[in-house]
Length: 63
Image (tube, rainbow, N blue to C red; front, side, top):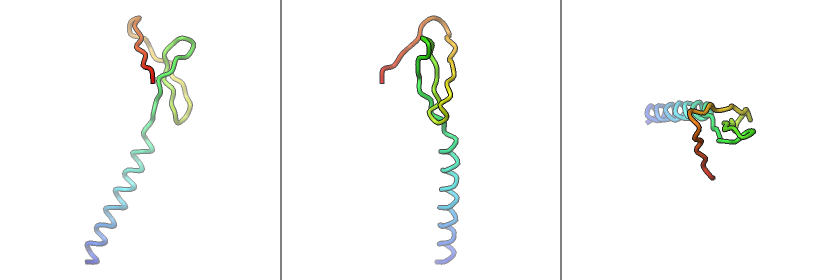
């Protein structure tokens, strides 16, 4: 009983720490328009990155 409890506890601690590592590395971006040009906004840091256009058609989505 005690051996299986230690095994389950070790598994739960390992799983929890592994999941926290993956969630911290997840970066979310939002599509924005900056000076009439499409860009990506990093929600975590607030950094804006311009997006290169491949052609002259820009698709927009309304949230």
